[in-house]
Amino acid sequence: MLDKLCRDPSHLERQLKVKLAEEKDLKIFDWLKLNNIQDAEEWKENVRWLIKLNQECGFQCETFALSVHILDSFLGFVKVRGKYLKCATLSAYYIAVKVMEEEEFIPSLTSFINITGNQFTCNDITRMERIILQKTNWDLNHVTLFTFLEIFFSYTCAQHFKTLFGSDSLAYSIYRNLANQAQHCISTVSLLQYKGSLKALALLSCTLEKITSRWFLYIEQVSRLAKIDVQELLECRDVIKTVVFGIHKKPRAPKLKKFAKRHSVLAQRRSPLSPIVENPFENDVMRHCQSLLLGNRKTTLSSIGSPIESKKPAESDLFNEELKRLRQISLDEMQMPSPVKRRRLTSCGVECKFKQDVCTLLTSPIKAMPV
Image (cartoon, rainbow, N blue to C red):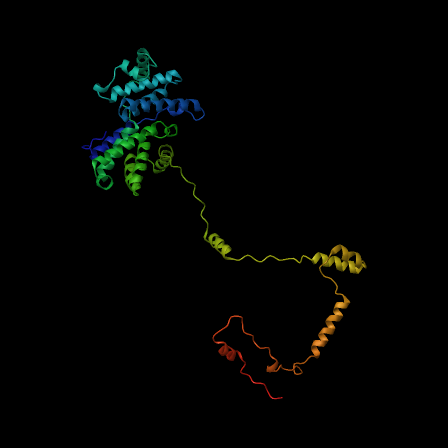
């Protein structure tokens, strides 16, 4: 874990230069080719099984990272599959336990075999340990992802502790989350092509992005110190977001130009033109005219059934006579009816107390003109 007393920026810069010089490129990516899917799945199953085993034993995350690093460096020299790959995985993990953990917590070989389910004997584990150490030239001082993650996080705490964290408890909780997320980065095949320093800085940037919107200012300072390309850092960030955080990058919609937006707005405002309504009797009238020209009037009228019908001569004569009669009538000759001949109003069945008053009100005030 972190040592809060070791937050000297100059000391961390010197330590970072030493670890960057010791960092090596693993050859396991050449063995786990993209075409050979079976080998990649088998490697992934063994590494995921190591994560569960490390949690059950209660060991540090750095122990798991070292065991995977030893296994990857061994697989770069020797191609192992099947049960031998399982035995090599357990042997590399037992070597990492003896290197990283304290002597009080290191289990014996027999108890370690019982914890792992008695899949192999003590002779199998010791023989595979000897083979791994011979192929790797007894080089156990490996630089893993956790090495750079601890340096980068300590350097960020030394420079911006008050602005980002503010308390030691919050800083330790954030680092524990980073350690758990780093285990998933180690067990991902698509991240094997990136170096441990690049993965550590990309994972730290994803965490700082949740804390502050100015995360790039803090990461850029560390990337210049570690001599990491920003473009490669952003590519590794995208892979980590999809694998660890499950965030998929949404495709951006194409931006419309100004005239295209204006055209769409105007098209919505314009009212559509009214459609041309055709005369439903146009074809019938044309056929009727053609039939008149040909002289077949009777047959065409019966077949077409046109709504235009000829008027009967009797009806037209009656209409003309009535019109003549109305024109001869003048208003001057009409006599006005006398008020004496007007119809008197009769009272209703219900008797009214004010019958006489009502009768006087209903009588007409106009007097008859003398003849």
